[in-house]
Length: 181
Image (cartoon, rainbow, N blue to C red):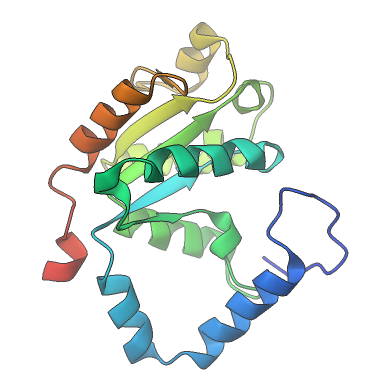
């Protein structure tokens, strides 16, 4: 379950006031307006990362949005969960509507059993999602391939051209899908 924590001291977390505002806006905004806003995006990306790597997730979002063709793409990550909502159901729904599963790769992804390894990554594979692993911090690639079967080649965060190319290829065919529905 997600909840609002006024006393959260993590400097990389979205501030309590901003989360509260988003939550209240979500409740107050009608379904019709919410659908209209969602339809304005060309595509959706599901961003998977370990909580302890939030700063790398934020950096990956910036790297994605630096590409002109990605400016109208929504990036979903777990900060959008609302208090009281079932975490697993929300993750599944967000992943279903996403055209790409972007994975922030760091040593924290492989140093212990985690939710991404057990739930998110297998779910993305099962749904046939395009997977884009972006190495945000040097990580043991052999162990990564061992723990995450069939993981595509990792893109290093400093290789902006390859990241751009892989984003474009991965999102091909998913753009405007939501607008056509």
